[in-house]
Image (cartoon, rainbow, N blue to C red; front, side, top):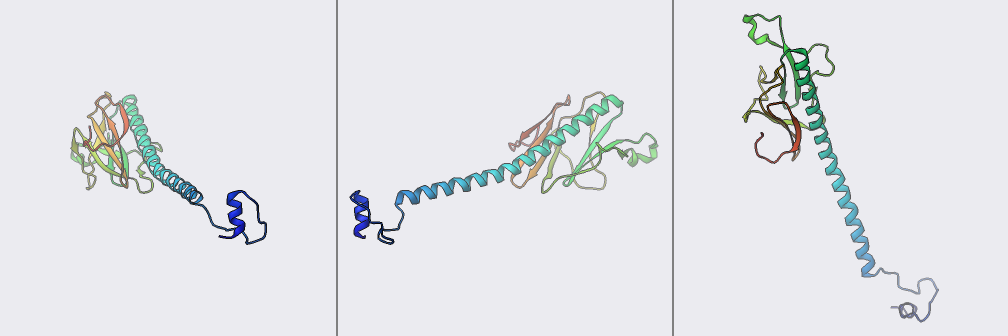
Length: 191
């Protein structure tokens, strides 16, 4: 250590010549910098995680709002309406009143020309992981989709839809009288 540096530390005098004083950092200064860097990194990680959780929650709330509107539409129109799910999205259906008994497969048709209840794809990497009606899982694949039917009476079977984004899960849950809520999944297997 130079004599000027020693004098500075003791508060005796200052040597103002360039290079006369030691140029290192104290242990406290290094620790403060490391703490600040740690806080910045932790904040960035929380913001990235929160963004995915926020996107998934928003998609769950959007689905709940659409299903509430579908249930209301069924009551006001006096017609049963339905929704079917696949891993990539969901589709809305109405009864085909022109179908005959022989056309049992054609009893349902997608809602033509309806912007609100048009087929929807999940955004980004969000997917439908599971759909349950009265604890029974519905198939998300297959040629003829299983549907959740909304009755004009306003009554429907309890169901749940599990949405997933990576390790995050959100469940849209409906009870028998049509109350829909969005909740974080707790792995209890639905309603």
